[in-house]
Length: 232
Image (cartoon, rainbow, N blue to C red; front, side, top):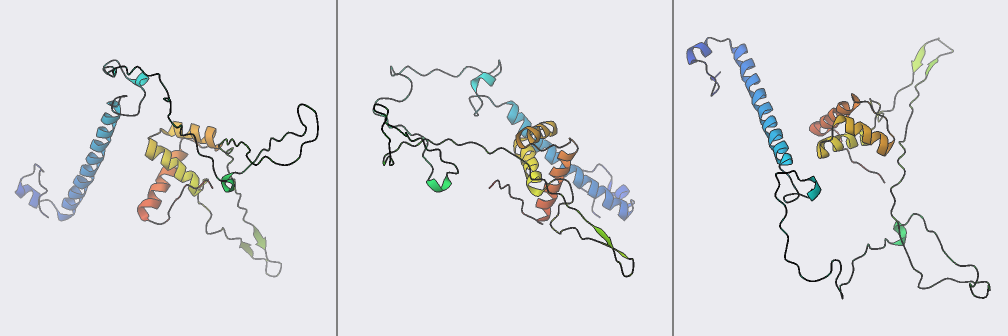
């Protein structure tokens, strides 16, 4: 094998090394170079994250340190803050009826001045929509496998686990969420555990977090399955 470039070993000494050992050395060098590349990329990402402030990112000015110069103030325009006269507001658009899960009808029963019975509907009724997150409740599935004894010959036969049954204690959506929180937002394992418990009512140990992340990585690298976070 050829002497790797940059390796401080004389050519004669390298040729006297057994071929098997040469292969191991080359493999280790490649692994170290790959690891160094990942560490350099991580250092660059962390350095960029540390240097972020309200002037080069979406961070609020209150998060700026003492070394960040104050944002320059623009010249006053003489107009009041907020929407100007004649400006058409852009409120939140109402969703169509097929996307509304619950309707609360506020209809008067009697006339306020005279107390007479009121009937019918308002053709120009006012509508107000409120979007709320659903209460997260994990769906826990218990698999029960039976072993039955044959009355004829006395042999025991075990039931078969379903082919789509996850091997671990968490399903693919839970695994995908853990991988998303750690990979996309860089959350620590402890923060992931807290968010899963507080936000999704799913208890998870610290040791389970890297296990779920490894499962997601293995699935994506092997192109075995496609994990989709779907809350519908």
